[in-house]
Length: 108
Image (cartoon, rainbow, N blue to C red; front, side, top):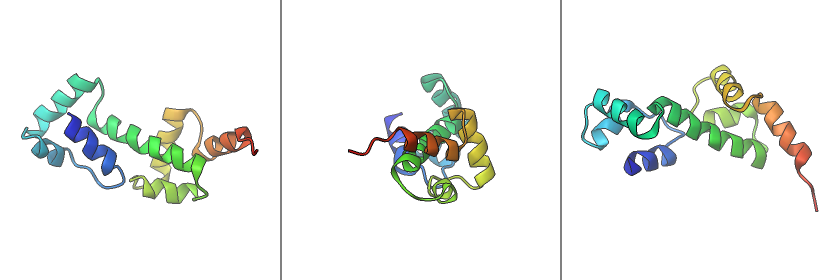
């Protein structure tokens, strides 16, 4: 499990295929998918999306990149999909998220 989680963490911005991860640990894709869900309580795709959104959130707060640049840098294929998933997970749009953190920053 650790090997797969490290791979996803290090390659979140690339295309990650179930078959590649299953091969990495010597399992069939279907068996690996079931195993991953039993061990983590979530699907592999949900885990990958969580990793990507975590990196995107950090970039929204810490960088001046546009939302579109962050979207593609974090491995999402379309801006609309990124916006939809971000809103579902965080409860606001990426732009709203960035603005709310900029308001909270205190410059000393």
